[in-house]
Image 1 (tube, rainbow, N blue to C red):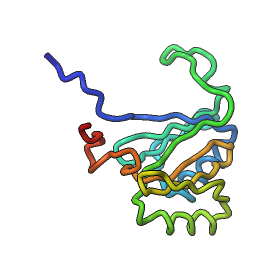
Image 2: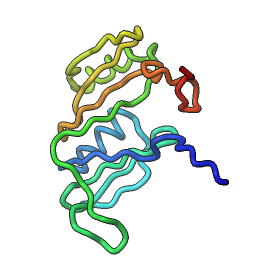
Image 3: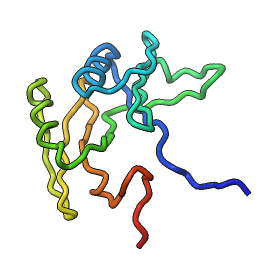
Image 4: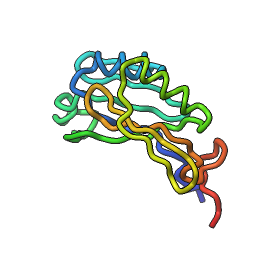
Length: 144
């Protein structure tokens, strides 16, 4: 019998109206590794063992021979994992890049996360995986 355990989120998608601005922000400001770019359609970035896919929504709304149509309207949300000790340096980096910190939240776990927006208005969060009780690189939650 094959292992039917889902290991992690492999890819997450956000929708952006300006791919060039998104590429500058995610590649430059956040320092993510660009993996793929298709003019007028998408830019894809690697984040550790996962992918962040940024699509131009109109380009993905029509059915194609390869993929079903997909998309969303309005701002999406993605939380990106960082170490709690790196959070102050991230705040400084974002502020130096002119990115406003929308909110900082102190969680009951004792961890803190920050929220800010990408150029398309998507809500991004930097948070420690420990906030969710995720330990190590396995992505597994602790046993109850």
